[in-house]
Length: 491
Image 1 (tube, helix red, strand yellow):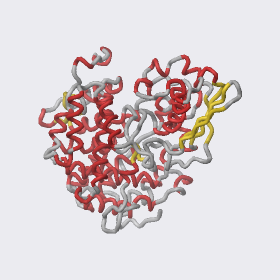
Image 2: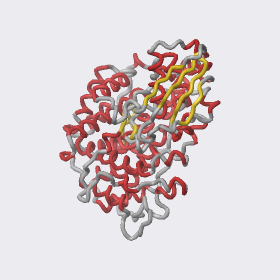
Image 3: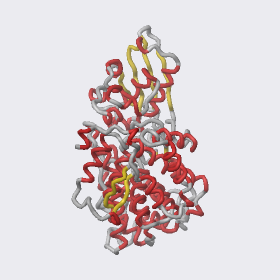
């Protein structure tokens, strides 16, 4: 990790070169199509979140910010909301909406959510600048590819240090994506990364009490990226060694032990000297089958499989769940709190709840995150009998493995292991399954006809003359017949 600071560090210069020269026509057709499906998935998550308490409260809070009432010509749209906002406020809110349900995609090796920072950073800006869908799509692909590589360098070390890589790395990915949309040259893209270094943030403290600050991270990262690229466009001098420098990303955000695990070559893997990609990290982005922290998915699927085999849950003596050591802080500890989630967000990060719901109900969807579901007495009783052990055979972070061992009162045991979590690149949700998930999410609050029209627009984004068409379509309130907004939120 040594570097002389008179020239850009290798990661910054390589990612800048890749972003600058990326041409949509050179992206493999299947990669471009998958990118559109990832975008569709993120938009579906935002539409599904529209009437959630957190969405309504964040909407109210953002509209209360100073300067929220500006001329219509200076405003931008948020997904599922007709009342317009200043551009950066809309970007922030779109990040909250796309990420708020924790149902959005995850780059497995980097352990981060990329679409929810990269898409908001581009969507409103592209509409404001009357950019084409092809230009926005190329920038989106650049953001996903670069962000995935930056996060992979740390090998999940950010989490162990208490930083949320979605917020931290999302700032760099968004800076590069916005820079691509603005047409910055390679030197300016290096500067954008240097500026992002001073703007990147995101604490994991929310894990201890289920608070809502995690939901802010991608939108804040999107705004940081937008700011960094805009400053770079104006020639603001910036550090040129944001990754390898003495106070660069990995030295500042990782302790000495975790720095020893860093592999800087992963930051440029698959990108040749000519700036072309020979391998696409976008293929390694997983779409979530459950609206829960990705770390619990394999264990949840294992529990659901045991449920479907006809397990008699009334005769369960105890449950042992084998998990990767790297996920313990997020979803297993403190165990007493994880066994008694008091909010949907605590439930999303509770391994005991994910397994209990799977064993008892055979499902784990949005309805299972309602208070009546995670507060159910039978579920809570079972959670008290669920314990975890660290799994020495886990291949984390390549896979988010999970094994559930159920001990019955008659002395028998039932075991199921998921060595590769569903949705992983080695076991992906198909594009058809992504579309099905989108339709389920989008029709929670919006008519099916509207959902189908949005789906068609997103999947044909590469042919869309102007992103304004899509923004106009998305910046629409739910139909009154489908809404029931708590009065306390509106007042």
